Amino acid sequence: MRPSRWSAIPWAYLGSRLGTCVLTILIAATLVWLIPRLSPIDPAEAMLGRMAASAGFVEDADATLAVLRAQYGLDQPLVTQYLLYLGSLARFDFGISVASFPTPVSQLIAAALPWTLGLMLVSIILSFVIGNAAGAFLAWDKTPRAAKLALSSGMIFTSVPPILSGLLLMWLFATQLDWLPLSGSYGVDVTPGLNWEFIFSVVKHGMLPTLSIVIVSFGFWALGMRGLVTTVQSEDYVRLANVKGLGPRYILYRYMVRNAILPQVTAFALKIGLLVSGQILVESIFSYNGMGKLLYDAILDKDFAVIQGASYIVILMTAVSVLIVDLIYPLIDPRIRPARGAP
Amino acid sequence: MMAGLAQSPWLNRKLVSGAGILAAILLFGLFGRFFWDTDLVFIGSAPVNLPPLGFENMRGQLSAAGHPLGTQSDGRDMLALMIVGAPNTLLIGAIASVIGITIGTVLGFSAGFIGGWVDAVIRVISDVMITIPPLLVLIVFQTSLGEIGIFTMGLLLSTFMWQSPTRLIRAQVLAMREQGYVRMARLSGASTRDIMFRELMPNLLPYLFGSFIAIATTAIVTAVGLEVLGLGPQRVPTLGRVIYESIESAALLKNMWWWWGIPTLMLATIFIGLLLINLGLDQVSNPRLRKV
Image 1 (cartoon, chains in turn green, brown):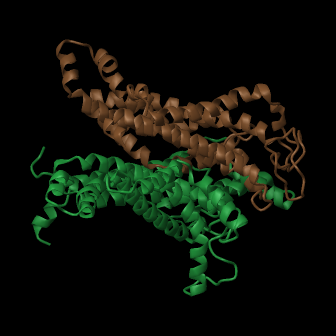
Image 2 (cartoon, helix red, strand yellow; image 1 turned 90 degrees about the vertical axis):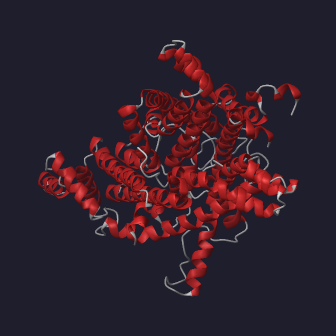
Image 3 (tube, helix red, strand yellow; image 1 turned 90 degrees about the horizontal axis):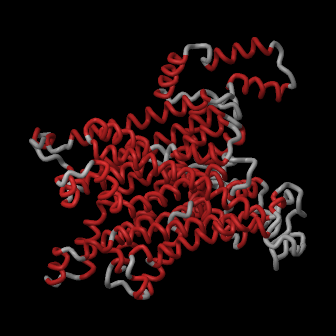
């Protein structure tokens, strides 16, 4: 690549975004490590209690406790423990699940993560596209009144968490109408793999979780887009385009939506955390095989290694998604490319 | 819109109806206990699995006059659970957002007004903390902490509620401090405190309220999420806790829709109320939106 291409890349911007992302992950990792250490519950004693509960009694409890402590690294000084922990995080080693002993936590996460990412991608894209289209039509002066009314009444559920819409949709479509499956991410009668039965089953099982997320989150984008298009509508260049006799639909798309989409992408970066949390909860009520179900089961089982590992991975996922949005941003907004020679 | 209402932007239809909805829920929670026996929230204080008035449960039992919203499978009265649970849910949100907005205002003002390294530090910390989803950290927190009360829950949530007000207020202060009237005040020798409270604060009010409602929504959403996972306060009823218990007892399969449905509707109403208030406040701070 020619050097002039390289100088067009906003290095300072990229550096600060990357720094924020790394700092976020580090702080989250530290919190996940620190919090359980502030609590009165000793993981070694908890483990011993679990052994005692399943075996009836534990011989030589003190010796076992010492071994467990050593295993968890609890006999080391705190600083050593912390550094060892950071090292194991970098290797994605979260220890071993207690509830599904002796499966490593990372293996459980690896099995759950694709489901969560898939559901997230589909529901985010759908709500972003539907929401922005709805918002643009709401603000557009050529939209029929009836359509506006229908759109705005659908937006009343914005800010209702998806877990509530999930419950209602589950009840309606799975128990009352019996159109769609109640829970799980694919049927018990299909074999996972690249066959049509499996794919069909996955789509069918994914419909309700996706719908419960989209139905409550498209309104957020619609509200933003409506406000932006309303503002842009009275700009001079839009008036000029009208006077020039350009088609109203062309103006809506090329002149208004294109300009209004930038702040929407910025809002997106701030919204990801809430979207991810909402989806985790939806997965847990639908027993969808993703991170949400993994966390829910781990909470019921008091499986601390899984809780910490899964929480860390979800936070990591959020931070990386925000970074990706931040990195896309300069591509669609030429203004963010730094002015050369500016202080 | 009526002519009288149109005069003050604070009295717009959305703001008033949103506030009305929240006030109704609050009154229901505050005064309901004087008209209804709240001891019926205890396990075994009522017959089990009764449907609401006018419905029939799967065993063909009709509702009892003493339990108009039905009962759940531990023998707790739904109406009593709602009367006790709804204010608890709102209280958690209120504690978290009052603390959050207070910290956010102080930090946002300091960052915007003092500038320099204070601004840099506050900006980096709030940028970083705003990316971390509170639900996940609080799941770790509560699973290791064990049983907590309403106030602790609000306090825990508040650690994630100051970031967005900080950013918002910092940005607004930065934008306003260079405006004519603030410069004028500074030139005429007004003290920093005077400028902050006399000049900036009144203009910031709609933003402050908007930010307050936004973080209250986030706090309640997160609290309900934790409660539905079985975390959060466990000895006192909250709306999320009622939903958790209904899921645990497979109320969906038993077709006991009132058990999860009533708290779900109640929460949805709260969120619709909060949304309407927020939309109304948008109209106060952004006059362009008033036409639509």
